[in-house]
Length: 175
Image 1 (cartoon, rainbow, N blue to C red):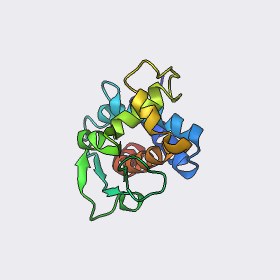
Image 2 (cartoon, rainbow, N blue to C red):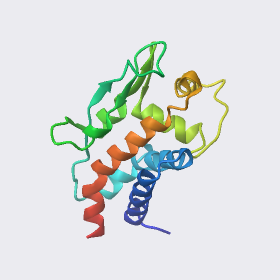
Image 3 (cartoon, helix red, strand yellow):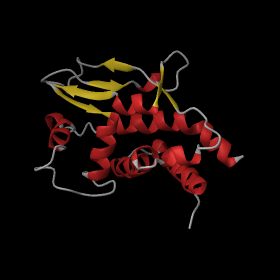
Image 4 (cartoon, rainbow, N blue to C red):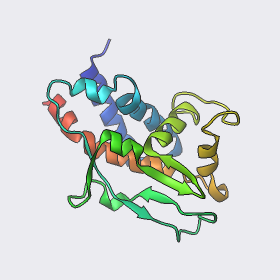
């Protein structure tokens, strides 16, 4: 059996590899890792950080990309890649990061948490499930605007943001 520290380091390294090659399959795999790190109870990131209590801070900005040609029925917000980890970006804690709306189209919103859960629980990260009779149906529709699979973009940003936020814990555990 692996220790929490070993699992964390393995998951962190897997996220780094996924960031280098963010294919749709790799991003679905990332959702399972992110769920384990941040959403399972108790979250792996909190378990390995219990003694040291290093801050888990996400430095992100949101940008309005409403002029993007894939949008036809509302405004879409996404985490902006260049701001991830930027010194002038606001630092938010995990709960605030998970609550951040990544996408908003015509009254339907999707937070970081919603994205992770949809990819892990419905889209194949951990489970594959019929979304037709579930609350997550609207997220599936949102991620397929104009038949373009835009879901990979928010997941890639979540992966990058998470690597930046978790780097101090990974460094501590490897020391």
